[in-house]
Length: 480
Ligand SMILES: Cc1ncc(COP(=O)(O)O)c(C=O)c1O
Image (cartoon, rainbow, N blue to C red; front, side, top):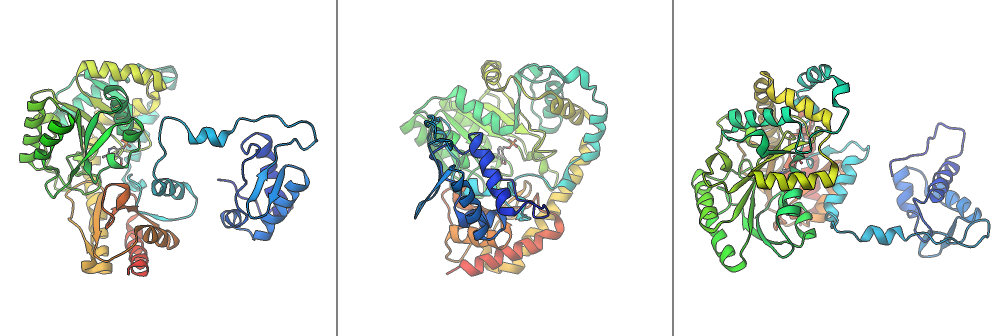
């Protein structure tokens, strides 16, 4: 609920709350049979006394809109308040439990709720850049040259041709990948690219290998599609490609999803030898590789790491990336580079899904990628991120000493931190939230419950040390 009563108004707060629910019951947001929030929960949410909620619910009761059921709660009545015969309303709560896409896990849902609330949490959970790292001036410049009237229609479903040209040039100059505008599909972030691949190239019962831990692990879309996921543990040098062979022999896995450079969440990079071997194995057994690469341009020492796609001579790799971690997550610009047949198939699906990506962000992205100032921005970004990393790592060392074990990543935006003590993940998560700080518990990203992911890119520099202090306090409070 993003509404709050306005205490400065003359109207009593309980009446405002009753009016709020009366309107929402009237427009079907709370259909008959559904429960209103608990008195205690709503009082906390709206920052009012419980007795105020009781008065509001009593008023709705007097209007015949709800029934107060002892020990159960406040339920919207099924008969119309004027006594006329009740109308049958679809059971929206039941509908909301159905559908093809599974829900996110409860911790992820809680994180999204917290992040969307107006409470000022120090946010080590969200994988995006802080406002000072966005290339705002560059974007404003591009935006000011936008001739709006030319960009108000539908765009080419595969993506704006100028943007695809800019992406192809960018892949060539910054990532040593040769492609052409016709082998690129513009997507709504790398997230939609993963979604399209799962929806269009795989079918229920297919086996895929994903990293443990990984961003992919956190995505219910794999399970919604009925895929069997097999886990490849991530070591300091990334996954061990040899483990793919028995998975192929036993389960005929169809695809391997990897985020080989500055991996989310471990920050590791698949070593050159392992990258080579992964490509060899893929070529020997005909297994497709999906290379998810949002982070390679964040390398702190500026040494470019060769992407799998740039090393692939067999055409085995579908390459995904986006502007989210290097420019702006809000633009929602991502892309897939791959064989024409795949790009055509996914373009057809994108037409069914959303009729192509929004035109204005595509225009801005095209200018940005072609801008000679992009490199200066990337340089500033790397400096800014490595500074945030140093602040976070130093704070962890001084607050938790040897209790916190982590490898210092050479790029990316995450620290994957193992906590030495015995602690209950859920209790730590709750205690941290109560203390004003939010992070990502390890179990949402993989099988480890002794790790946490601390994402440093979004937190303002002067809040990093206080944030880690709050996190450490929560850890000490819950550690047995
Ligand atoms: C490895 C990886 N892939 C894909 C994504 C999705 O990002 P976006 O859809 O914003 O490009 C993320 C976001 O955190 C990520 O870390």
